[in-house]
Amino acid sequence: MMINMETKLYHITDTVSQKNEIEEIAELIKKGEAVAIPTETVYGIAADCFNVKAVEKIFLAKGRPSDNPLIVHIERFEQIYSLVKEVPEKVKKLTDKYWPGPLTVILPKKSCVSDRVSGNLPTVAVRMPSHPVAREIIKAAGAPLAAPSANISGFPSPTSAEYVTDDMNGRLPAIVDGGDCDFGIESTVISFAVNPPMLLRPGSVTLEQLTDILGEVELHNAILNPLQENENAVSPGMKYKHYSPSAKLIVIKGSKEEFISFIKKYPSFADYALCFEGEENDIPLPSVTFGQEDDPFSQAKRLFDSFRELDEKGAKKVFVRAPSEKGVGLGVCNRLYRAAGFNIINCSEGLIIGLTGESGAGKSLISGILKEKGCVIIDADAVAKSLTVKGSPVLKKLSDAFGEDIINEDNTLNRRLLASRAFSSNENKRLLDSITHPEIIRICKEKAEKETAEGNTVIIDAPLLFTSGLWRICHKTVKVFAPEEIRLERIINRDSLTKDEVLLRFSRQTEETAASEIADVVINNYPPYRAEDEINKIF
Ligand code: TXA
Ligand code: MG
Image (cartoon, rainbow, N blue to C red; front, side):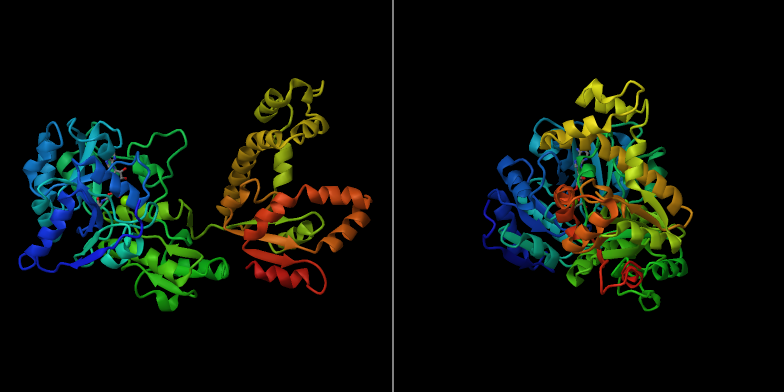
C-alpha cells in the first residue's frame, strides 16, 4: 500500500462549469483508483463497485476489516437493477420519497456483486446520494460506486474535505472538496433481507418517517445498546468500535441545570464538557458545543466535528449533555453512545472510582478516609473470596481446570493448593485469571451500579485494579503511592514478616505496578505529604 502517494485536491463548486475536472476524477475511477468524494451525509471513498482491485484499494486506504461490507452508490434508479435481483414495491415507495437522499436499503444481491463489496453476505447495500458533485461523478464514471465513509477505520466520519485530508492525505490519488456536508451523520440503513424490515443504522431519514411508509419496522437492539457477546452483528459495522474521538466520553442524562450540578459534584473528573450552543458560559468546564438542544439536525451536523475539535484541544475526559432520542436524535444518540462506549448515566447517579496501590502504600487508609467522606467501598478481594464458596460455579470451573483435589472434603476451597498450582507457570496463572476475573468484574459492577443508582459515589478497592480489567468499569482511577523503603518498613512492623518475605510479596506485584502507570490520579501517602490533603486530588 502506498501511503505517501501524491494526493491531488479538487475544489468543485459548480458541476456545469467544472465538467472537465469531473471528467478527470471519473477517469481516475475508470482506471481503477479510489478517490474521496463529498456526499450530503459524510465524505466517502469511492471506487468502481465492479472492479475488485479498485475496491481493494478502499479497504487498504481505510485500514478497514475486510468483512465489513460497503454501500454502493447509484445516480439514477435503474442502476439498482445491476446490483439486486428485485426491488419490492414497498422499497420503491420508500425510495420514491427519500431518494436521492440519506437513505440506504439492503436487498439480496446479484451474483455479479463481489463478496469483497458485500463482505461475504448474500445482500448488498444501495444508496442514491443527493449531493450534485457525487451524482455527477457517478454519472461520468459510468458505474455504481462502492463508498464507505472517508475516515481511517474507527475514527469519526469526515464532514469536510479538510477532515478527509487529515486522514487520507498520501493514501489516495485524489480528494474532491464539495463543501461541508449538509447532514453530518451517515445515511439511515434499513434491511429488507428480513421481514419486517429492520433499521440497522438510524440517520436523517427517521424511524418515524420509515414507519409512516412501511408500517412495522424493527429497531436493531445494537442501535442504543452495546452488542451482546453472543449476539450476531446483522450489520458487520456494529461490532467495530466506531465514531470515536480519543477522549473518553461520559454521557450524562438530565437538564442543563442538573448537568451543571453534576459537574460541580465531580469537578475534576472531566477536563471538558460537550454541550449545546449557548450553554458554554454557564458550564464550569471548558466546553465544545454540538448544535442546539431542540434541533437534532444541528446536532447531527456538528457531532463528528465536535469529536475532532475535542481531540484537537487535547481533551482527555468529557462530560456530554445527552440529546433527545427522538427523530434524527436517534441517529445522534446512536453515534454518541457508541463513541462513549455506552458509558451513559443519569445526572442523579454517582460515579465509580477505582483504587489501587502496592502493598504497604496505604490503600486501606485512603479507602477509610473516603468512607468517612460518604463514599461506598466495594472490596474486590472480598468479592473474589465470595466467588469460591462451597458449591459455587466458579469453584466447579477451578476444580475442572486445576484438579478435583483443590476442593477439601468439606467442599471448601484449598486455597494453598490452588495457589501452588496456579502460580507454577504463567500459563496457569492466566488460566486462573480467565476463570475468576470476568466474574469479579461482573459482581463488582452489579454492586457498584446498585449504589450509584442511589446517587452514591463508589470506591472499588482493588489491589489488581488494572491487571484484572476492573479499571474499565471505573470513571476515575486512583493509585496510592509510597516509596519502596517506606512500604517495606511499614509491612515488617505491621505483619511481622522478614525483609525477604516482604520483598517476595513485592515481586508478585510488578505487573500491576507497571499497569497502574495510567491511573488518573496518584495519591502520595508518605511524609511530608498528608493523606487528608492528597485525597482532594480525587474530587
Ligand atoms: O452516508 C453514508 O452511508 C456514507 C456515505 C459515504 O454514503 N457511507 C457510509 O459507509 O457510511 P460505511 O461503509 O462507513 O458504513 C456502511 C454501513 C456499515 O455499518 C456496514 O456494516 C453496513 O452499512 N452494511 C453495508 N452493507 C451491508 C449489508 N449487506 N448488510 C448489512 N449491513 C451492511
Ligand atoms: Mg464508516
